[in-house]
Image (cartoon, rainbow, N blue to C red):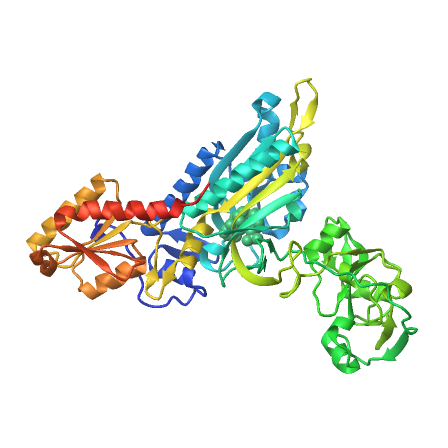
Length: 576
Ligand code: ATP
Ligand code: MG
């Protein structure tokens, strides 16, 4: 392809609309353009890179034995009522009505559609296991669409769904997808880290997220500094050393704390460290009030609390409920005397001589012994892990890092198959629910994550597998006949060898061409100029390397082929 025949819309200036480097570079290198918040057009170069990511994903899904299908983005809302997700998905789901006033949704995901299909098409154990996948557009009305393709309202996802006869068989399907993910991300040139994840509204038992570790990531990841333990902060656990039962704590003492409400304010006012305070938060779990307690130097982990309560919905109670159950204004809640269920963090087991709210205006209690003074329903792990906490698997210390979730594998169990009566007949003719798994990859997010992980001050450094073009062939003197002939010859050779090449045939200064080549980030830059050619060589440089190599025109093709093959081999080295 010739530069002058396609649209290469590179930008010199920093785009104002972008905050993170990968978003800036996708705009500057001319890959995408914004239509409106969370909506992007792929320009020719961007679409080429996207198609390459899709091709790798497709190849690895096929290799793992998954079957490609294509489901409608537009879906009847009844399907979502059947799985009880029309409400739990909430405002994230785009809803609309057709001309017959029938409520429809634009699919944010496809568990409902695929399970409905499977309930009709699969009836016997002989048809299982089966995994279906599609690469398709998803719609989510995100609260904060941002960072370009990272969190968009319309994006491309690869979603796959496995169906098995038993939980053990489902584990094997899960493992096959997990391994396929490791391989396909590596082939895309992405370094990912699988981390344990929360299963959230989707239900089910086990789940991993594939994270690209990066400062710009929206997810907090807890990692052990010593072993391979890694988990999303929503899921992460820590090793808690439970205290021995306390001896004789003095009797509780009510003290005046006029208008002193927050942990920091109480700590300063009473001169007690936050760790000796108990934070009491009133929630509504399935619309019933419960109290959650953690030490004052910790935060409550709501996903964990929700799981501990086995609640469908969980929200902070509004002020009027807090006042009602504590008999005090907001800011003075405490466990002593509360008559609602109380869930305390595991680390508060046997906590004694603590400071808590007094359930009375402008007052706190000193010397609270939780076992003695409060009616705690259960002690559970409900707190957020902090940096420096003990690893749950080894004697290492936990630290906090940031990651971009590019993929997610879930074991779903029978939640959807039961809702859609997707059963199979076993060998004895008995009907059993099918056991399901689901597996997503944000294909457009992957594209941007590659750039987030691989760039320098001059632009993108594409892995050879996903670059818009593997080779940027720069013609420095397009009007020189020898240069033009060499470029045309090499272009034809490369194309015949199946290597995609973009020829910069513009009438521009070399400096402009070099700058653009670095910005776009061709893995290989090949330069043909009159001076070099007169000496009998053309220049070949890897985007990621400092030094160039020089080759006679007759050997250029072979050198380029070899370099590309080496780069491709490096991407899959050590993969399953
Ligand atoms: P997140 O936690 O980032 O909102 P999610 O857990 O809701 O993502 P899934 O339902 O697991 O996402 O979707 C599968 C994959 O789709 C994610 O791993 C992510 O890569 C991608 N994805 C999800 N939401 C978006 C979005 N708004 N824009 C682009 N990609 C997305
Ligand atoms: Mg997810």
